[in-house]
Length: 164
Image (cartoon, rainbow, N blue to C red):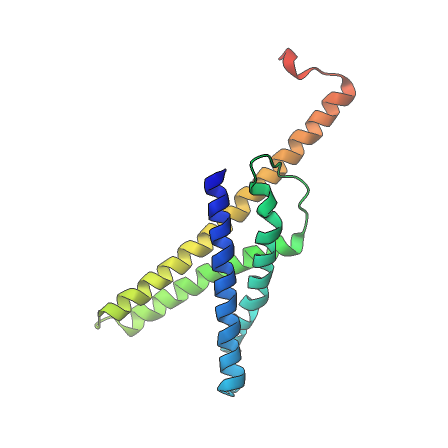
């Protein structure tokens, strides 16, 4: 459980950093550069609220990664969806950037291009880890709720768990 908690804290820190980077990027583009609005700006604008929801999701679900915690009772659908959308947007952005870099620098393979490839790969892995963590926590909560429900039925009917 300690490794999962470290992974959870790492995902939280990276989510905060990426969301902060997106906010700073949009601030620079809109206020400092005074750029005209283009539809391509909707992608980072969409990722900002998803990133904020992801950060809140990580803070609220941190309690499920304690030593004696049971994963029950987290029903905030907006946070689940926000974190999943942030994860999907990270994966898709990384794939799009990888493809764009490949098209731009097919013949020119210098060190800066490899660094950009590595950043895209890290973004892809981060998005994948976000998605997998969300999926596994969701499955754990469903399993724990089902076990509690079955246990409460066994308590009502008087079935002893140690008879099997």
